Image (cartoon, rainbow, N blue to C red; front, side, top):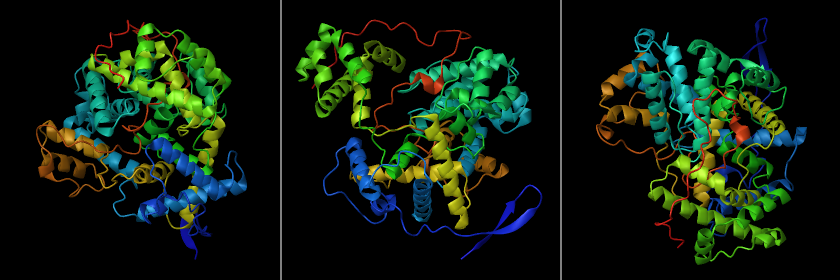
Length: 546
């Protein structure tokens, strides 16, 4: 079978024939998500946690492939692209699929619902009437709202992401800047990016239209870094010097160059988030790094040498015996056991400090000051946890090229899709795969940004008819009958049970350590320092190791 499709060649529209690329034969049957989600395949032994799932999937990948695919090659790339396309087709056919066209439709609905609470997001006249004169158009209001949404999305669930985004947007309405504060496990990165937005707005003389144009403009990575350096902005991120990126890359490769662009309607970039990285690791048998460097081991040993007596006593009560000088001599399993014990100890300690009133920002500072919690996490991540982000600019380029090939394969089979929606389509099945392998329920409702904003709008007193009218006026897709008007109302909204494809929140996952290279550091231009001196450690009055 051949499909007729319209292809614009730059001179005239010509009808050409694409020969379908076969994807009915699954390239990797043992790790095909559909085998678990649709055909009830299960492991023989019970898997207890995400680490167990990751190791199981790695073993199955190796049975499929024989050896990991660590580098680009025509044969390997084609196998990955076909696997990706096959899983997209399976996801589309799966009953209840809710992430197809997620970016192009759900975000459109979300913006329409937000405009009920804030008319300036949809109306130029309302935007110009905002006190303070911050906006000249509705698009400028949307730039601020979507920047707040992208920046505060790191490692938080959708309902919290929307709450934080609205808090920041409303602070901007009142003051003309974002409030420089942190949220969630990635508090320091969020705070840095909020400060960076304020700094860039000042550089552009408060012209949001000009700033938005810069964020959407394309540069090579070298060009962008050169521009940033001119204004005292150090732009990090693992990208090759000649890679074409957007100005929003200054917020990081995932949040800025991916998610913000997708929210703005540019659906060409693929957001390589935690779950897409796991999908890639499953396809390539590279889910686990499986090693730690001598430098990482030495870091753990050094950080344990200066432990205060209060920590030593609590650790002994928890059955953790510390011999810093002996750490470098431990084998991999012993090192992994120590890392896991220390990570569990820190998590209980963190919760105890939170009960005593410490903020996420203070806890991040304590963690950095102590160093051993981060060092222990690095050991566990290296030896047992999944690889949750690309390790280099070359790897990012490789992933993008395979995504492009997969899109071509899908097109040849009559499915036209963009990179952003491909990522969204694979997002829920990847999460569901982990839930199924842990024996958990996957039938809970997949709430998205439009769901969370609908709940917020109703809680704040906006009726269903007004929201539906806003959706109709903007021509938003898929809204008729989507929500039950009686399901929401004044008071606490129904919780968003699972976050959408762009947001990283997952209560079962340990937070990734903040990485300076992800966001970059900025020279000067801040009204307050990004890293304040860490206060004294608390008394641990409520901390019990048991």
